[in-house]
Image (cartoon, rainbow, N blue to C red):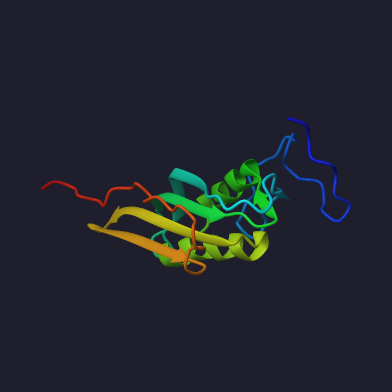
Length: 158
C-alpha cells in the first residue's frame, strides 16, 4: 500500500520512522495524528494497554491498569507509536485513577476529533479495592459495532 500524499496543512509525524525517547510527563508527550485512510467509513479502532502504569498521588507507589481505548475515526487516526509513548509517559506521573483515565480519553478526543471515543481503565487493587473507570464522548454513532471490552472484573480469591 502506498503512502498517502502529504498534506501541507498537517505537520509531518514527530515519531513515525524516527528514534524517539519516552517523554518525561504526559504534558510533554506529543501525539501524532495521520489522515484516516478510510474517510467516511464507520469503523472501530481498539487499543489495549494491559500493562499501563502511573503513580499513586498519595504514596508515590506504582498503580497498574489494563486500559482499553475504542474510537470511531473522523478525519484522522492516532499514530500508534506516539500513543505508546504518551501512555508510557504516565510512569512518572502522579494521579488518581479517575483523573488519569478520563484525562487520557478527553485529550485523545480533543486532539483527534474522532466521531466517538470511549476508554475503560481497569485498575488493579490497591488496599483491596479494584477501581474501574469508564468515560465516553457521547452515545456511539448509530450502526457502529461496539464489542465488549473483554476485560473481566477483578475476582481475587473466592
